Amino acid sequence: MRSSSKANTNEEICRLWTLRRWNSFAPRVPVGYRGPGGGYLLQWNNRNLVIDPGFDFLENLYRIPMTVGDIDAILITHGHIDHYADMNIILMMKRERNERLQAQTKEKEDPLRLILSSDMFVQLMPLLRSQDSGVVNVDEVVVLTPDAHIDLRRDMDLTIETFKTEHIPYAVGIVFHLVDPNDCDKELLSVGMTSDSPYEPESDLSRRLSNCEAVVAHLGTVSIKRLLGFAQLRGGKKVAEVFKTLESAGPPVLKREDAKMISQNILEAESTLGVNCIIEELINLYEGAESYYAGCTRSHLEFGGILHLFEELFQDRTKARVGVISEFGEELGSFRHKTSDAINQAILSGERGREKQRVMTGDIGLCLHIAPAGEVCERFQSNGECPGSIARKCAKSVSHLVVCTKCHKAVPLRCIDELCIRHRREGIYYNCPRCVDRETSPPSGPLIAL
Image 1: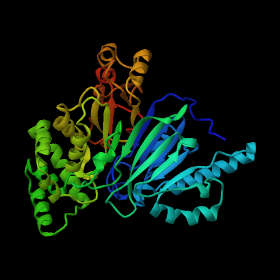
Image 2: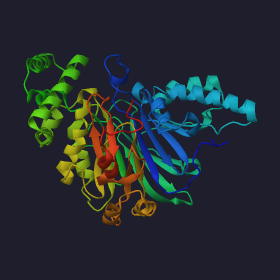
Image 3: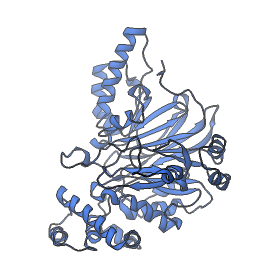
Image 4: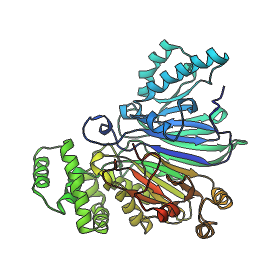
């Protein structure tokens, strides 16, 4: 039985939701005001696929608003807790939901489809077999191995291609190939996710993602020593002391109070020296690969890897693409959306990218509408979801849209303002031109209160 709360629509538009803010340990260290972790949601042909439901994912999901009953499948790329923390909660809530539904109607929901990395499969299968609640058909759990091609066209209208990452053993990156519901042999578009992966010069990461209309890439951080360099643009004894400690301590590790201090100093340097100075300095850091690999943590792409990856992916300026930078270290604070500005400036000659191409900052509430070229454009023109002048300008060139978190209208990539306000949990606000023009108070959005 399908959940009654799901929209009954077959439009060929893929919705990709970012439902996370910080990476790894940050959401669960009980200090300060830092916001939640989370995961991602891929919506296609009335199916909802959850990807890496980490800390606070369910809280973020319910604010869209959606519920556990809307989830059709869960995919986990590797067995780090920030990628599966809410998994057991989802299974428990599904089981209780089924019990109540059976008591009232004698029916229950369709089994949840699980798609798990090898380490997660080993960890979860004993629990699933012991419960035997009917929430999951244990005999149909899919195991993700590197270089696999998984056919889910029958029940999900997509196929999955995997590739190995060098994050931990068994970790994989993902490419979703979405097919036409009326013709399963016709692929309409692709969405790629690097998951947690370092960038290696000899890797084929960009080749694996080369045909994707949308790519989600995990940053991790700008190297700690580079961040200290930004903070020192303004000076300060505390920054110098932390820098000296890291120089003599071997592998660079930050304390939480140091991370907060660095974030504050970067913001003050920005206000003193100007945003362009910071962005220019950020771009210049990684002119050569050698300087990047010297400071890489070997677990995430970091800024240099992100720059190189999107530089390769955006070489074809005729193809409509959107990139999302996600999984930020908390030490970046409200500075993090400058990374996407710098990427757009460096490879697309503008902080908002080009008409058909842009790199966005991923935060809770970012919703992308991804569709084959031209189809979305006709939709927002006919529905009046974009100001007339912009619609006329973009009519023949735009295929991907971003949803404004204030008015919920979908507008072209270049029309969205990314705004980050200090002391408001450092959430990113995605506002369309109409909402920006109307603002007399700070921007707002339904998910920014997190």
